[in-house]
Length: 308
Ligand SMILES: Nc1ncnc2c1ncn2[C@@H]1O[C@H](COP(=O)(O)OP(=O)(O)OP(=O)(O)O)[C@@H](O)[C@H]1O
Ligand SMILES: [Mg+2]
Image 1 (tube, rainbow, N blue to C red):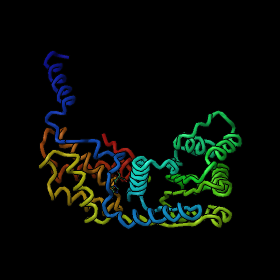
Image 2: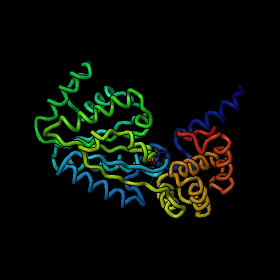
Image 3: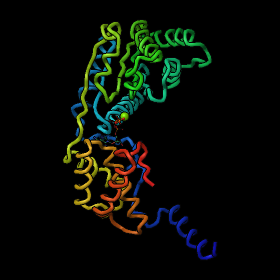
Image 4: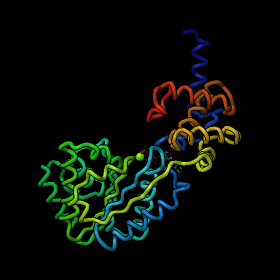
């Protein structure tokens, strides 16, 4: 490589480190893992989940099922709700409410679910015990006084959509938790793309618990535009994204099923394309090109939004 090539590589690298000349203000705000403090157009869901939690706290064990298509804000809303609850508990010195969020696509056995639950709520129980011993220790430790556990099982349809042994084992764990805890109350929040998965839950489980359903509808183009405009302010320098571009992404993503993750993916990747071309603004052409690339990659988007 010539010294000139090295020089320009050097320049690119230092620009990258200094974030100099970038059209992005904060890339993190556009990433799929970012949890917004406020979720727009989800006030109704927020309120009904919160009310169900309060009822569960005062009365009996409850199961809240949040269902809706991909990218409709289910996980983000619950994460934001849990963050707020934990913060509030810290503020007022309440140490009786525990929250735990477990992804069932990644955590597929009752043993792993229990270990994660114990570690997320911070109980001092060694995880090297077998399942029965671990469950007994957990029960003893948590049930010494009135407590409230909010256990979120994200992508719960991944385990209950089939009749595997693991699904039955996990169902049994949920039954044991809801039946055997005497002082501690439990609220399980299941997040699912498929409402029908609840047919796989046993009558024994359902009969013993209050059930709440909360639907997350796909976003329409107007709602999407609003969600995107908030992220544009956070993610890009002023003037990079025009109203026309914003509208186009909102329309494309509403047409593609009202999926906010897809909308954010289009926005982020169009920004990257503009930046790679050395341009200071995102054009409609950038958006159309990214959409084409995503279409050709055989899926609406791949979960991590990698197109290059
Ligand atoms: N109402 C909203 N306001 C702001 N951002 C949102 C909103 N809804 C979704 N998002 C954003 O869209 C992305 C996808 O949302 P989320 O992961 O919560 O969807 P989901 O319904 O859990 O999808 P899946 O079923 O595929 O897991 C996230 O980056 C999230 O921040
Ligand atoms: Mg999700």
